[in-house]
Image (cartoon, rainbow, N blue to C red; front, side, top):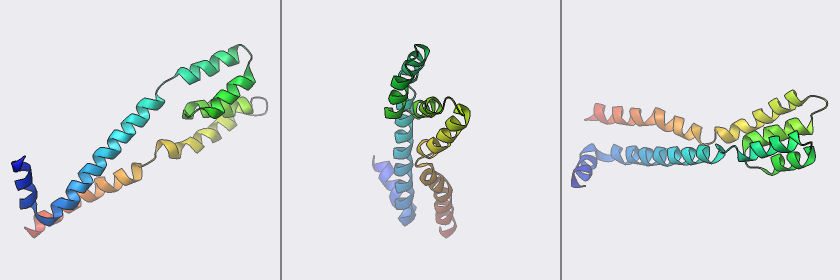
Length: 126
């Protein structure tokens, strides 16, 4: 523990933002892992498919619209527009889900760009 503190002290003032970048990127990585693990479940999708197979389109549509799973919402869009153009409706719904899936990646990308530059600036000033 004292060795880590010694390294931080030797690194100077630049170590503070580097440490902050490390902690933020770790937190974002953990959050994204939890997010992807949570939406990985296929139970809602399987239940929707079972309802569609039995002809219960309204129940399947309600289940998809109420679901927090992006794939279920895409399937619900296809069910809602199953007669005119389900593929186009599903494509539009999938495009609407992309920001949710890419959430917080801009912050991580900034840290990926910034952290090496902070380390480089410390190296040049030493």
